[in-house]
Length: 132
Image (cartoon, rainbow, N blue to C red; front, side, top):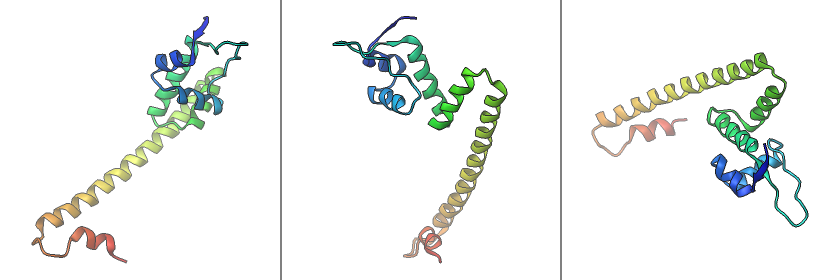
């Protein structure tokens, strides 16, 4: 596929801003094409696809280091290792959901205590948070 996109068009095609493209290049996630003498760097549609891959992986909670690992695994056709990385990410997501659920229950209880209160000067939420 030809290299016919400027960095601005690449950013538009991938749904990111130019600084995101530059950042991914600095992180080694995206190659920076050579700059022709007196011209502009040109990017391919495949590079736009790669940027969209990076953004989708981030949306699933993968860090940029993990995205780099996924890209390396894709090049190596290592489906089992990719699955293992995704499984570890799923376990982390489940732990975060459990933590958030526990936080929700505690906050709900505090709000119910506040609602049941007499409206006096002491706030049950502040009292619980301020305890030693």
